[in-house]
Length: 93
Length: 122
Image 1 (spheres, rainbow over the protein chains, first blue to last red):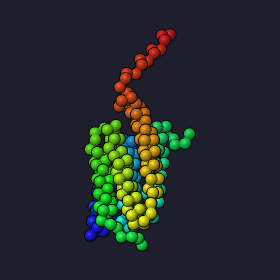
Image 2 (tube, rainbow over the protein chains, first blue to last red):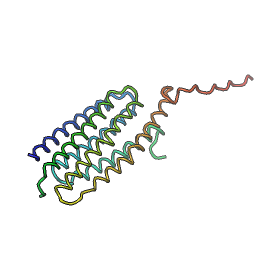
Image 3 (cartoon, one colour):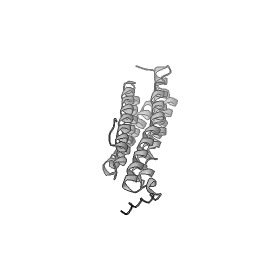
Image 4 (cartoon, rainbow over the protein chains, first blue to last red):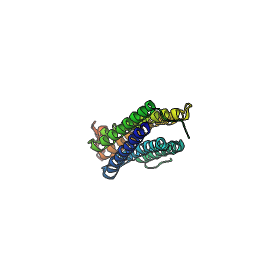
């Protein structure tokens, strides 16, 4: 009973997060400026992290946790690098 | 593989997980619906702080109960996101202000530029 409840909630949450990723993808494609696209990409990274954590709970392994951590680190570095590029015109001066 | 999940733990995990993903959805809807970039910066922070925080707490509760020992490595991701989100957004907004000032729109371009010195007559 409790396992069925948890599984239903997890599947519903994954659907919700997937919908959120689709909405962020719309902003990524439509964004009028480059900074809008960068913001949408950052949101997409965060939603992918949430999705990885949900996969981890659903499959009852901590393996997906490292994937979420790597996605978080990559998202941070990518967003900072693109913001630096938009500010200065080059990443490493 | 693990101990059976008691009903209270399943209920708490389900509640936290659904709340966290709904907050992420609200953040994405706000990202899509706001008008200007400076308004659009605000909504995704809901997903990055509360959304991911609630899912992390749910993960902590689930693995602590099923493995019968404290599983706290999710705090690492929480600390990481808490430290990095402001840095990212400050850099991004600074880049946006710079680009808007170059384009002549936005908050940085509201004050009138100082009048240019006329070149001296020969």
